Length: 119
Length: 111
Image 1 (spheres, rainbow over the protein chains, first blue to last red):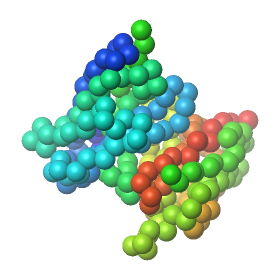
Image 2 (image 1 turned 90 degrees about the horizontal axis):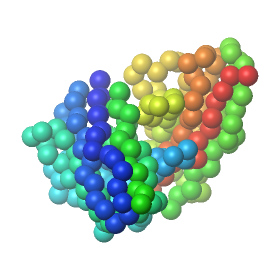
Image 3 (image 1 turned 30 degrees about the vertical axis):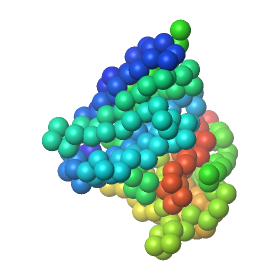
Image 4 (image 1 turned 180 degrees about the vertical axis):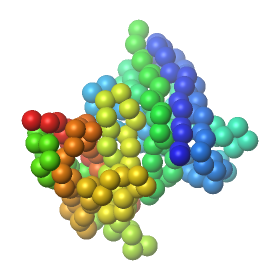
């Protein structure tokens, strides 16, 4: 079964930085696009960014473009999200998901990692 | 961007009775490859979303057959034939044809 475990969230001041990680198991990580999705408190789901299998192509939502960077390490079965110039509106639970736009699925057991941007 | 509109926002249901959730898109979700990339997720409190249905009507492994998806173009439906207590939570549709957008969610609760 697909297991995705997110970590790295926390409380950060506006303008600060955080790096999120996602440890993947249960599937051939290097064979799939990977995606970050976020969910603001009490709100719905928002696609953030995705990356292709070898890390050569990255795509971002307009709301994070130029501030966030998605990356992956296939040797470590890990996905990352470097978040810079954080804003209050970035406060959310961040999930990683397997797949790109057409075949997205979330892992079993992952509970997301909470990012809170506040002074 | 493609806007996904779900209804109703809240759905009180009786155990053992059917339930239906609607999802409408602002433009057709038929991809040029002939597929329609419409996914349904179920999210329980404190958990990540679980995919139930992909490409409109294909159930994921382990999803009970009381869940079914249908529709085409811009109009889609998730049906639960007989609601069980474990089905409570929020259901989201998501389109993957024109990048990615999610519906606002439908909260299912037991009457």
